[in-house]
Image (tube, rainbow, N blue to C red):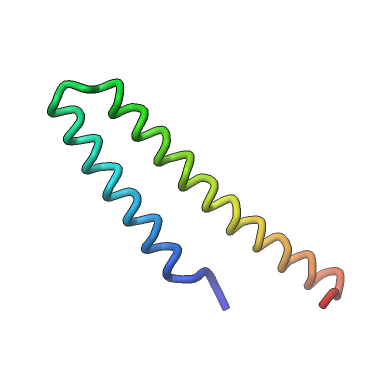
Length: 68
């Protein structure tokens, strides 16, 4: 029907893990690594969202073009 709840929990879990790692790395004085962790987490979530949007566009295309 809609977006799968599992995807939302996966994105939230990744966000929590990234936030924890960034906090720990900043406390250790490794701000460069903390920025890299943040960037990699953002890129990973961005690819997940891009795949969801691609599926959405495929469904819209199939509805409006009356394809299977």
